Image (cartoon, rainbow, N blue to C red; front, side, top):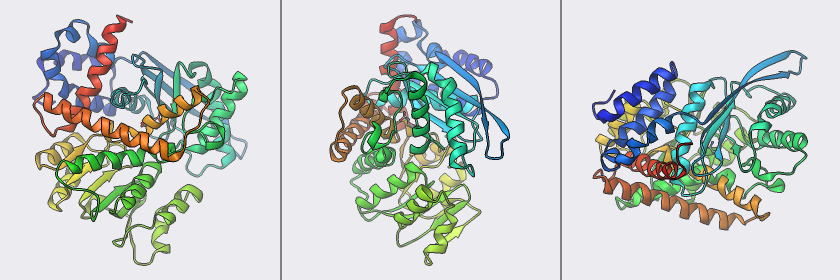
Length: 449
Ligand code: GLU
């Protein structure tokens, strides 16, 4: 435990640890926020009085359910499904669904907890939630994924709704899965309630630029952060971990802004292409073929594939971790610093370990936490909800423009809050405090509910 935890928060932390045993990722996410809140409590005894943090840490509702489904061989499989409806002070619960074998309650709670502050930071009226299942879509046929999604929704439908809880995608849940989930919801409820899910396809209620939004948003925010040092993406070398939706569109925006993405990865290893990653190859491998990144090196002879080792060993100016939690360790942070990296922005949720964050910040590397730098996805989800509510459909250009404005606003909020609390340039504290205060004020106004 860091010595900087405010004494008032020690018993709060103890209770959280005791009440949620064995949930390491959740503890990590809570700790990171608690470490930032001491100075807020000094100024706001009313938050202490109303036990705002104790109430915030406890999800409003946690749903765990059985998901039985039949595979292509006719065998019956059973997975576990989750939806944690964490906080609805600012709006309906909002957050993605993750389908990955590592999913258990602790992962869903860490993601749901982060989502509260992230969604608050966007400035849009959305609460926080998250869900998923320990289902592994890798190697499954389309028909198996469909049957799984239908079974998952057959339980989930009773808990969600456009005014209640609005899921979307996350790792392992993209347009295909959202389609199957929406189809089943529509069938069970006999309602074309487009606003119940976001990340939909463009012909059936989806928003232009939603697919691109998380990656683009990460780059927009990084651009703001670089500008504080008189820098831009132009001419920079960028390393992006991952090759999913976030990584691919972060890479696309970096290239549009004049940067060169020299490495990308998946769980099997990473590719380095000093001339710049050919994104069309990556998109074809990942979006169409659902193949491994190692195949990139077969197609681009000047590139190399590295199966073991860390992508963060590739020297770069800007690092964008866009794969998964705790993928950037203290050792990786030291290597980035040694290689002269000037900025790190989290495209994934909590990809940087706490000690790695400390190392980067102490070395003066610009650092954007995911709550700020990856909120573009959920922000455009909220814009999708707006379009669904008004039965409207905006152009790509208009939506991207809105996204850029939102990301500028998010950065300004983090920056001005960090200044206000005498930690200039500490965007971790800035994001945590700014995200927290808005939710806390709403909770105060709504009474003890
Ligand atoms: N899963 C994404 C996130 O981590 C998006 C959530 C959403 O669009 O609701 O923010």
